[in-house]
Image 1 (cartoon, rainbow over the protein chains, first blue to last red):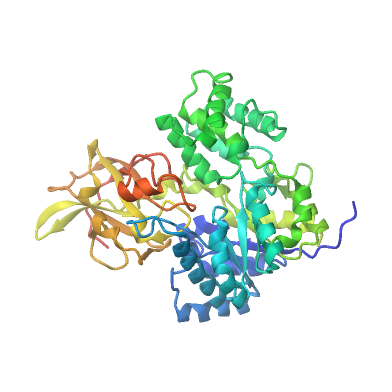
Image 2: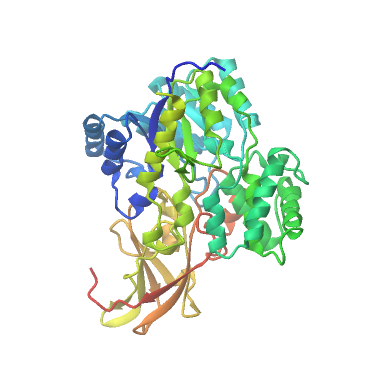
Length: 379
Length: 155
């Protein structure tokens, strides 16, 4: 199929450098410099407010410094990612309106730093977005709801946004696909980390096998109830299920199903082995064709990856074997997407059980990912 | 996340107040890729050489303020613990720890999450006990550290 010339832009979510920041190897300026100077044409900056900033108010001096860095390194503030911790007040669960207040604060903060987009979490109820939308329109900030594995582009989380956009004609609401939704199997670095902790190799094999069945919709249990939840929340729920035997009804069939699937393949499976097999539940099973059709509603993309390894026989080229990047980038091009794909490296966490010397090099992983993006975009 | 790096390795010290050893301290970091409102911080599971020190014996020093107990930390609803910042965990233990090596089992509990969870109302009424895994999504195992008591001058 013919594709339009690449108009997709490249950037980096500084989430990718979370470990370098933790160990004080790269501060915020060094992260921005790396993007501006070493990624052959990438210029987009995405941050998580509570990671990169003195939150909730970084102060006027910081704002001046920030714009100084943008000028100096030739970078552009693209997206600020914001959170929603509903137990902040501890004496009650925050109402939708209280959450909208926090979001309005974050929209103003994003504007003060020159961002064009604010990414909200995948689990933020539409009511909260509706409440904050007038301010976003006034400040010309586009709100993008993240669609993160195991959610899919065909699910309610996307259609409710598209319907609301159609009803109102707003240009300030859309979605942020996280390319983890195009994952085809549990990452090899995740499985290796579980095995170092004592999981059986058979559990990894069972997890890859179950993932293949889930993708083909041939899993021996119902997985439909899982798609509305974040992977983080799903993992927490599964941990609780293993400890207590209890879980939400929507999860019950799948959680019991994982246990049976594992028991049939692994001798004397332990909790950790079940946890490994349950990773197969995290796949979104979404379609690149849907991405092509809704590309006009995409405010930005999280270029999620867990491990960039060399492409065999092609020196200097890299790939993530667990995520279908070719299909996803082609869909964005065919759909006419003109925004930013931002590298979002997450695999560093799967090495943090090891010593300092064995940790992954985030800078190198992002450089490899940008090589792949540039090649697939066809710059 | 950061399982092996949540406690700074040279930070285990006895705490002396008015000439008495009142307990011990540790320097700790976020088990996450971001900071959070301080009120969400729910305390630690901490066990030293098999002795468990519940949250009531802990206080938390951050943002240039004196150590606060977790009953007070939960009221810090507009104060933020930023990602970059190391905090000092104080544990009340009269007499402190003996010189030498200690085995510390450790887990942080922070009630930060991605949006609404089924446990929200329950955790308002009855916050989870640290060590249960609740509030520890990104470091779900209790970690063991072998640390030497640092008897040098505090920095």
